[in-house]
Amino acid sequence: MGTKREPTARQLRLAIELRRLREAAGLSAREAGALLGVNSVQISQIELGTSGVSEKRLRRLASHYACTDTEFIDALVAMATDRTRGWWEEYRGLLPTSFLDLSELDHHARCRRDVAVLFVPGPLQTEAYARAIFSNRVPELTDEERELRVRHRINRRVIIEGPDAIPYELVIHEAALRIIVDDRAAARAQLSRLLDLSEADHITVRVLPFTLEGFARAGSTMTYVGGPVPKLDTVVRDVPHGSVFIDSEAMLGVFRTRFRKIEEVALAPDRSRDFIHELAKEL
Image 1 (tube, rainbow, N blue to C red):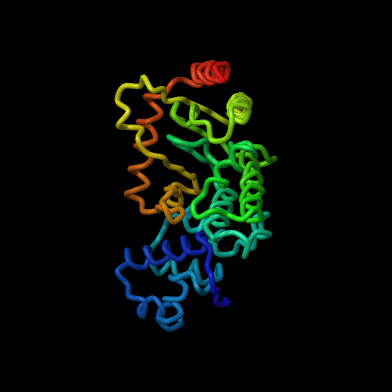
Image 2 (tube, rainbow, N blue to C red):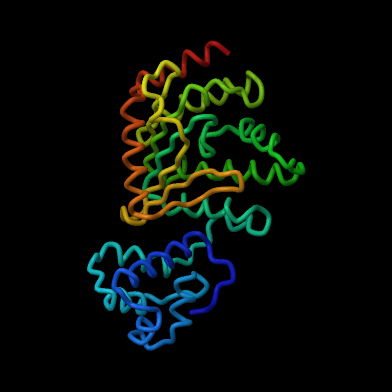
């Protein structure tokens, strides 16, 4: 397979999982290479995501690593052989790579769960809301850079509004609903969009009101993206320099529990819709 200069987050995830399998088997890169009939450099390139791996070689590696989880192996094969050029490719070289990695992650997701504390999550934002967010970015964006980001964000709606929409669960804090990022008209439009989306069968919206007791459970934003198998789930956390992808099994378990606990203390979907409706009337 050819060498890749800039592996995507998806390609890096495949590389990481293959390295984890090798290490779990107690093999060095040199030993794994000998079993495959290649040198250790080629194994290292595969495990860095700078070189691809064929289905045949991947299945041989999995066999040598004594991995018997067929669903997991099939999912890795799908990642290795995927040639998708999604809608986000038109932004390559125009937007930071993290934007494209998030879009690719969304595209392959089986489900998504968000906890939002200060802002409405990107795929749910109206155009005016998204533009206001990007207009206040530091350092400032040019008009062209801002509009590229707005257009990309609107395109990300496909995961919840397209023909292959995925199950989506949102737990959103009252603060995020009350913060007026643009003006009152835009805020009303954003709340109206949330109400409309919450009526869809595949979308669940729950609210964390200010009056909530035990808020310490819900004090951080997170995005949990379901992969083809639980081992390939991903948590996305926003940090000052972009987004961080978390994929260790131990941490995924922590965030699954965290989401469940946050969900438990949030208002039920029907009460949440009523809550958002009342907020909209106040604006």
